[in-house]
Image 1 (cartoon, rainbow, N blue to C red):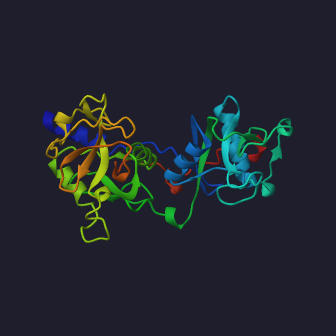
Image 2: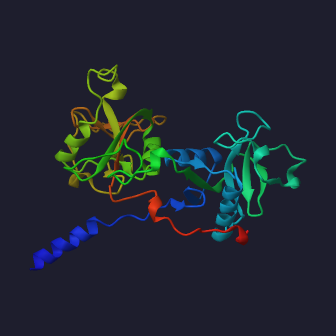
Image 3: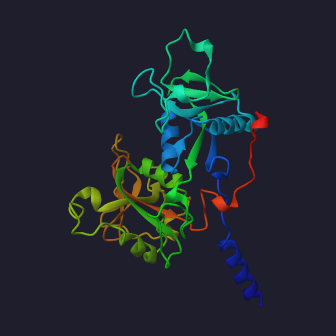
Length: 322
């Protein structure tokens, strides 16, 4: 009886759904997420992009009201956020990420900055005004995803990204990114997608991941050294063969079959060794962290980044509040 109770409890734990951090708003017909941790404009843009959204701008009265409410509710200090509207491509020509010109937005300029050279990026304040800002300053920001035909049905991996596929053997979802990125950028992208760089726990998982490699006959994938391995969630945490997963798990308790001669303790200061990769043959390889490679993200199917639109909250702001 005791064993049955314990087993049942484990099952309950495994089906817990992580709390979404993108909340659906019916009035906007889309999702919003406040990032309170500050970032440069470029980092904010990339984070929103990789999360499947855009860096929000007050492109209409409803988005403007929503952003103002978020700033007020969150009690940000200073009370402003980066917006996607920028003039990085042409000084003085400010457009949102969606291509809406600043002239078409119902905002007001803060006249305090008229005697200074304007920055290429903008920050938005609680009173609905915009101020120019250098793009390398660090500020909070809001990501926005408009509901469209690609976000009508969430798949069995808990995401709208249909490149994630559930492996019934491991119980995890995986996605192969064929675009080449450094290990650090691969880590960022997987995190933004609601997952993490794949952690290989055992031989079964190594087999499940290696089948994701491009077929050998596909154009140039078979022979090019950039396509015979992938970044995974393994790292030398102290540059002295302290190999742990990105979740701090000891390698001795994970899959630990290294390729011959590996790890070889790469020491080039510019390329930075100590990042784990998986070869096509299923063995581990110490790679340069700055080397651009394919990578594989892993995601818990019970974890959701976006709140289901059918479970939306009542309006979380009203125009009367603003």
